[in-house]
Length: 264
Image (tube, rainbow, N blue to C red):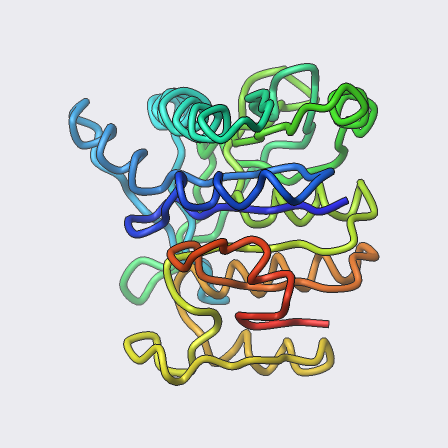
């Protein structure tokens, strides 16, 4: 059992990933869609806004309008595109959001601290959440029938049953832990964890889990979330996480061979 997460920023190649997935079974695919969400939000006159926590993590501000946009872009356009790419490669895929079948349930964050200038503000109307449970029975049922589940945010709020936004890397980590996956593969648009984000030659080939905290303090942007997700997956019993490049040929099997940054 493998869990593969495909990034949603420009440069990630859904078709390329789909071609290699035909040989990696059983597996569950999770995907992001940040670029699509940003583009749709701008087109609809609700430009994206981001929050930076005191610890330096950047997240999307998701008010009532933004969660609708996340749902349309992630569970709509991006999920359909990836499922279609898999079908084109004779991979029987089923698209799901975390809301479908109560696949992923969580709790809304009632207060988020955000650094703005030299002040820390508390945001109360954000509709992002913390994952509490994964419906593994639903996933096992699909897998037993020969399907590959393709999962995206949003997830379901356990209290008011409304959609909540979550980070797709951390969603993949929770699913991998819940399924006792052999490995979590996080595919992105760079070769792996790079010491200099602008220089691919600085890629780190291996990170022992004991060194994860030190690397978390060295990287910025989306890679911090990937390392946080890796930490959560390892803590949840997943033996190995690989951060690899979705742009290279056969990226999933390349990552499983250790081509990228291996964290264990």
